[in-house]
Image (cartoon, rainbow, N blue to C red; front, side):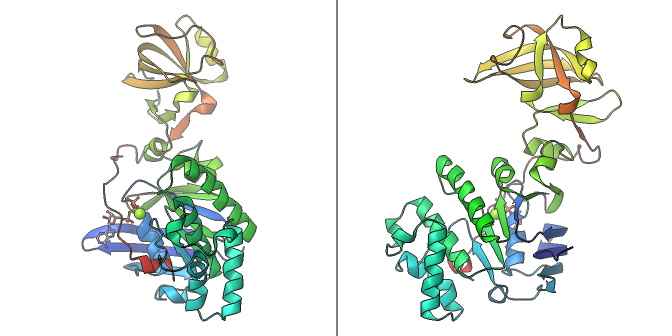
Length: 364
Ligand SMILES: Nc1ncnc2c1ncn2[C@@H]1O[C@H](COP(=O)(O)OP(=O)(O)OP(=O)(O)O)[C@@H](O)[C@H]1O
Ligand SMILES: [Mg+2]
């Protein structure tokens, strides 16, 4: 097995009596894109800052390329970092911004011009090398910040919500761009986000955090259909929670709950799954589908409020309307069985401001 690009071993970060990161173990696989995902205040930035060396863990060890780097200052780690506010130097050209990191590392002038050119090529901005940052759009500035981090040839590229300042369309484009750059360069990337779609689309490996702890990690294809507990399920958009007859908890997504006529035979569940009698409370028109709110009794006898996406083009049976009695089918293959232990815990994110970061930290 190859050494991970970086590793956190029992790492904690305490601020006074508050534990922001709580004894996490994490391996960052080499040449892949890992995302840290979780609600505001769960410790993502704190984790990234410890990896980068801007703050030392209260306890635990950080290994980079297998070597203990726990006490190594940021400039000795050779990591590239892009913060949410990308903080370009306004008085320097794009090319000089990108060449800044190599310059600080005493790379000779010709070589750093070459590297800056290469990095700008990679992000598709070679033609804007002589502009100043204020003559660029937000998305272009974002790419310059990326190029600047890449130009130092980092062992690890750390990105803290790098797309959050961009509008929705540009954000989606930049996701693909970052993926392309990552696969072309083979860089190891750690990206922080609180956007589940971003994490699902971009990650080789996604790491879900909650209250300073890692609650689940794995490839999106493995995590998405099998959330470990209710917190992860809610975070990934599972809206419906049922207690089964044996007391276990299960979750199902609105798009997988089928609304059928009330007289549908229970044999429909022959392929496994759960059949519930329900009453339609509300139907909201959403263009491609109807969002149907229902009240049902789950297999354990609890009254539950459920949501179903009803797509008129693929659904069988009549269009539901408020007051209808219907039958719901949650196919077995679509049920996510949740572990019992953490389902009772509160799921509301703790609100917390992002730790402020000085602009110069972006250029280590
Ligand atoms: N320097 C600090 N002093 C005290 N508390 C801090 C400090 N930095 C962070 N915290 C607290 O630690 C917790 C984790 O903060 P962190 O910035 O890592 O969250 P985050 O997951 O990045 O959230 P967001 O998505 O809002 O950026 C928060 O409750 C925050 O208030
Ligand atoms: Mg943060």
